[in-house]
Length: 108
Image (cartoon, rainbow, N blue to C red; front, top):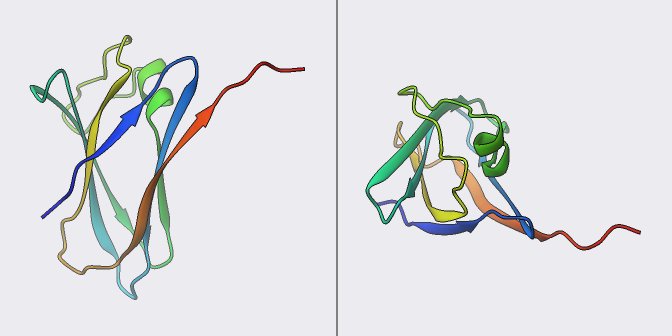
């Protein structure tokens, strides 16, 4: 069963999520962003070959209006929500996932 993780994206934070296939066979990874108090979903799916990684930059998806597998885009003002990662092939090949929140400090 997938477990939800939270993300935050704003002028002070970037949200980058990674998923890797540590198995010996290809696997189908499903990535879902849930937002608007759980009423909206944004869904991506990608086949990952052995040792391949999937990088999801939530800020880029928002800024560039990247459509999901259903043609839906994330709203421009979205700053937080949750995400789930699932293995659709049941191969249990994921080597891990993570979220990186980076504080954007002043540049010198």
